Image 1: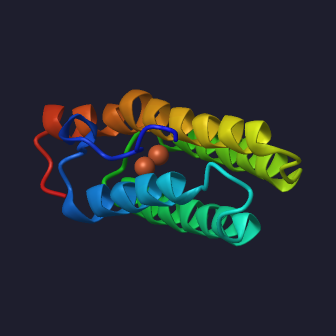
Image 2: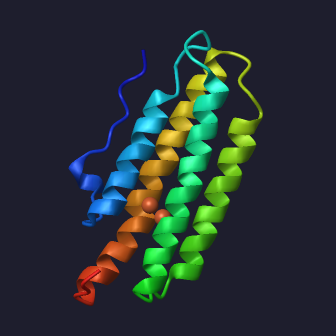
Length: 132
Ligand SMILES: [Fe+2]
Ligand SMILES: [Fe+2]
């Protein structure tokens, strides 16, 4: 059994809607089963793809509204993540190891992206004392 994947307060971006969406992403990654025998793996992975896209669109709209100067760069990160996720998850899973590797990959990208990229717009909001 893999350890539970969950959102922790250190991941907060300080905006209720975005934090809620990030929590859903963690939940969806946690829902990726560790065994091929449990649940419809493809349906769960599709749900993760769909929600990730929705979240990115949402986040980009908010960043545009606050004139985030690194929005173009941030969008490129989102595009790259979607394509990695699609390439990786779209291959299907031949065994439990492939499934667990995907789960780990998804966990790593979500935490790395939030801590390294999303937290840069948090800094921008704080430095400019924005009411967002
Ligand atoms: Fe982002
Ligand atoms: Fe995000």
